Image (cartoon, rainbow, N blue to C red; front, side):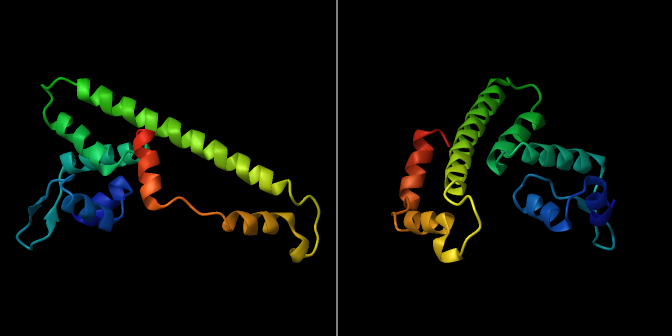
Length: 150
């Protein structure tokens, strides 16, 4: 099948398919005499696997590891279990962070219970006040991620 057909069959944009090829996740297909890419059923199945893993918010590196095991079916799957356990940890940490964010937003929303002039808005005042506080640097965020297992 041509790339457009693969795109339609997998609900994947053509550029994403090409990106996965460049990343080595999807093997390059054979070419027709007219130099068109000629994808086969295994390409579709692999692309569907990649897309499902991505829908579980797995990184490309995590998908790459899983594909390596899929390509070597006789290997021990202990590392697959470990990868999933680590991913569960990342998801749990993100859920905690999102709950903290939700609480911040709800607290902020409580600052303005009625409609009033913008210069009297408790939400805008709270945002302005918080904006004056230093934000964590990218180095701090990386440190927090490493401490929290990201």
